[in-house]
Image 1 (spheres, helix red, strand yellow):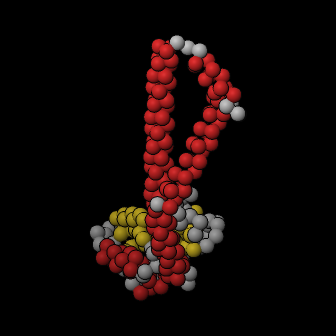
Image 2: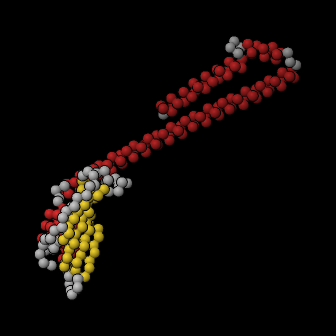
Image 3: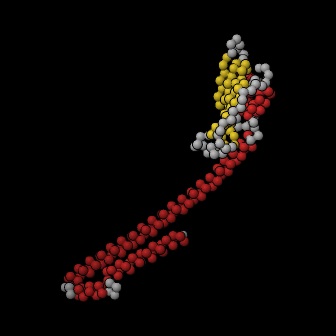
Length: 234
């Protein structure tokens, strides 16, 4: 309320200053215009004096009413603007709190991805799972690429795209291998899978898989890993 009182007092001072300037213009610095008006007034007839007084009183009343109305309207406008300013300030503080919390969550996510992926080398990782599941891998390649520019993660991490062929593999073993890749907790997800039948058998297939992951680092210059073959029979 002290802020409202300050605005009100300031407006009162401006109003009084305006009234002083108006009085000086109407009556003169030393009231010389008022003296001239008084002399002119006494030279009028009684009826003319009465009419002039009535008009003057009415004019003064209208002026006072207008000034009072203007005063209260300006005070009301100032109160409204002040209320809106406080509401905007509270909203800004709420947004700031929300932003700080979201930023903490974002940094926590980046830290988690970094801890779980920084020690991972693509080729040894997939070859290890392939050996454990007795799966043969061929043409294993990985490439890093920048995330979309409108993504909040684009400045902190890049995408890792891994491609591989899995020849002469049964469907259960293929599914087990892919499940183990995603269960590794390395933020790897199968993005695309193509399975083709092999001539002369209905139990084994040739598969080609694309896996997507993330890497914390700088630019998106691609790195290719040469083809490899590992694992046992299917």
